[in-house]
Structures are given as C-alpha cells and as structure tokens.
Image 1 (cartoon, each protein chain N blue to C red):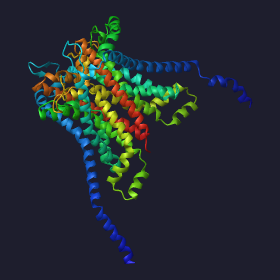
Image 2 (cartoon, rainbow over the protein chains, first blue to last red; image 1 turned 90 degrees about the vertical axis):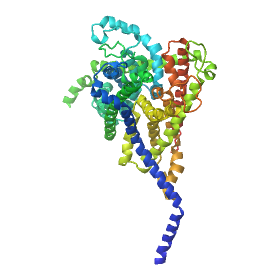
Image 3 (cartoon, rainbow over the protein chains, first blue to last red; image 1 turned 180 degrees about the vertical axis):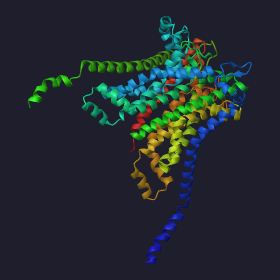
Length: 320
Length: 293
C-alpha cells in the first residue's frame, strides 16, 4: 500500500524539479503583467503629477484667481484664463446642442429598420470613418471650405437677429460659432456609436410589448425605447463632452484665438487647449507655467466628465 | 353576442391609428432621415475637398523634396512622411508590449478581480485624456529632461494615446477565446506562461493586429501631442533625438500660413494622411473578421 502511494509522489517531485525553469519563467511573467497593469493606473497619476510640477510656480503666484482673471499679459507677467474657460465651456455646449439631437436621430435611424440592413451597414461604417478623420484635417476643411460657406448665412442671421446679444457682432473670418459647428461634426460619431449600441442592445420584449399595446413605431421609440436607453445616451453625451472639452487642433485653427469673453457667439474667442497650442512655442518661465496650470484645469475638468460618463455607462451595462 | 356584434363596427375605428398619430410618425421619420442627410454632408464635403484639392497638387516631388520656404514654389515633404512613420513606430514599440501584457493580466490572470477592474477603469479614463495633455506630459518628462525636442518625445506622447486602444482590443481578443482551450492547455501540463504565449496570443492575433492598426491610424493623424514634442524640422532629422517633421504638424503649419503654395501642400498632406487612415481602418475591419475561434 505504502509503496503504491509513495512511488507516484516521488515522480511528481522529480517532474516538478525538472520543470523548475518553466515555473520561474511563469512567475516572472505573471509579476511582469501585474506590474504593467498597475502602471496603467500610475500613468494617469504621473501625467497629473508632471503637469502639477511645472504648473506649481503659476499656482503659487496666481492661486484660484487664475480662473476668474481675464488678462493674459506676458509683459507684466499677469495671467488668467477666464476667457478660455468661458470659450471652452461655451464651444462644447454649442457643439452638444447641435450634435446630440443629430446623433440620437442617426442612432435611431440605424437601429430601427427604416431601411434594409444592406444600406444601413455602409452608413454605420461611414459614421465610424468620420471618427477616424484627424482633427487637423477638420481644421483645414473648416478654414478653407466650411467657414467661408456659412459666412453669408451667419451674416444674414446677424442682420435679422442682431438685437439678440448672442448674434450681436458681425461674423468675421473666424468665430466661436463656426468652430463649435465643426466641433459638433467631430463629436457626432461618439454619440452615434454609443447610442446605437445602447438602442440595439435593449431587450426585444420592450418593443413587442409596446406594439402589442397598439403603439405606433414612433410612439414606441419616443416613449419606450429612448427612455429605456437614456442612461446609455447620456453616457455617450458625457464622453462626447469630454472629447469636445479637450479638442485642440480644430479649435486652434478656427476659433480666432481672441483673448476675450464676448457674449456674442459670432466673435472670435479662445479655449484652454487652443491657448496652449498657440502660446506654447514662444512661452517661457511664468507664462509656460501658467499654460501648464491651464492644462491642469483642463485635465481635472475632462477627468471629472469622463469618470461620471464611465459610471453612467457601466451602470447601464450592469442593468443589461 | 349581441353586445359584441354591436361593438364590432366601431371597433375598427377605435383601433385604427388616428391621423394625428400617423402624422407624428411621418414627421419623425422625415426628421430622422434629414438628420442622416445633415450628418452625411460634412463627411462627403471633407472627402470631396481633400481628394480634389489633394490630387491637384500630388506630384512625385511631394515624396522626394523638402518643405518649401515661404513663397517658394514647388517642394514636398519627404521628411514629414518619414517623420510620421518614425514617431508612430516609436509609439507602437512602447504601447504594444505594454498594452498586450496589461490585457494578459486583466483577462488571463486577474479576470474580474479588483485590480483588473481598476485597470479597466483607468484604461477608459486614459482614453479620455485630451491629446494635448499627452503632449505636455511628454514635454515634461522627455523634452525637459533631454533638453531637445525629438521623435522619441513625440513617440512617447503618441504611446499614451495608443495604449488604451491596444489594451481594449487585446482584451476583446482574449475574451473571444473559449474556456475549453485554456483548460486543455492546463490539462496537458502547460504553465500559464506557455499557454499564453503558445495558445492564447496566437489565437488572439487578429484582434491584436486590429488594435495595433487602429492605434496607428489614430496616431498618424494626431497633431496636438506632437506640437511641443517632435516639433517640426525643415530638413531630414539625422537621428531620433532631433526635432522631427510630421505630416500632421505640417498640415497645421501650412494651413495657417498665408502662402498659396504651402496651403496647397497642406491639402496634399491631408490627402495622404486621410488615405492612409482610411486604408488602415478598412484593413483592420477585414482582419478582425478572421476569427480563430
């Protein structure tokens, strides 16, 4: 009996010692993957830390007054980013205003069988390609094609509705409104992609039940499907907002880079990211530090928006 | 019986869709179709302008000459083409092993545990970091440390943006492999390392290839992270530790320049970048259809 049980035990020990190098490699490999996984989290901290390090002199000098001050004066070394924060938030808001209804509309179009899938699949693919076009190409197109094209329309709006403060300045070559429209085109694919995933993953019973109660197709969409997928749609809007806040090149090329917070949408403006892109080349000392302070504010803003978006989207996925 | 038959006539009317409800449906359908039309206009316009304006200036000199000085006719951007390839390559060399091994942990070793959930959360947040911030990060840790703008700094900035794409697609690839395959590998005595390197990775290769190509496509078009890292160079960069020209920064510089010749070259560069990205995105789609399991 004893010889029977001990004999295989010995061979097991034999075999385990024989494969020792494999086991060590395995352990090393395991720890390597753990280390790299932890590093993904550390990269986020490292980015924030490296921004903070360079921004520190500006933070010490200006404190929170940096957020409300509207001077940007490299001669007297006084800096504030109020116009940029205003421009960043307003341009993102205007972009969402146009992109959200349009994006939800396209998402509904792609998930409800208005047309056969043979036609819908290429349209969905084209929407994905829209996301792949680099922002600098949007900027190029905006400068030479889009802004000249919409200028007469905006001038008409200015003449007719100039008494409304938002339209009170004559639109020049570059302005916040045109930049926001291009931004809307850029964030459209984000809203479409996630809203579409949400709508197509809703349980079919919702639709069947609604039809069974006698609702028309559109009553089903507006009163059952869209409310049911609302958290996914809100998540997509938040992610799009995160993208709009941090978008740099298209805005740097189209927004006009004027350091003022004008109530009129048709006047040139500036955003945090476009300020950094424009000023960084010539900046040094406190000015560079102030640009990093601005970047830090942008980082915190987008982090908050993205974390909220993740929470909304993941809550939806759990329900699913 | 009499009761039900007396109601059968108004029954049709009662359940027929009223004209108001029909009209609501028709109006909404028209609205949705116009949404799609409005969304399609910019894309068609961009592609049309990039192709027509780009093809107009596309000459062999574009690939062989250096960028022209202000007001000088002709010229090309051979240094920007090589610069884009080099910065993207450096970005990929950093982010691909990093991303794939991270995905190995989150799916193969720590699937569903606290750390891998946290890593997935960080990946999502990282993909939302504005690209200009990635550029400032690389400026802070590379340009300030080495004292020079360089392709390496540009590549590091791009790797921050490529990393989340690669982690996510690799994770999807590993998830697509059935549990039986892993059990079979363990059953014949393979260690985790052996089963990952010899079974799982080869099987997930189409997904990883898709992720890498998508990440490269994104990196090729990124401008903001390169503005303060790779900067620009009128000439060929002699090493990866020198300022390097890239196609995207060239488009930006030449688009805002007042000279017609430089603006025309910006459109040609845009055509090349867009073609590159579209071809790569379509290739990635075809590759991802080739599933092993």
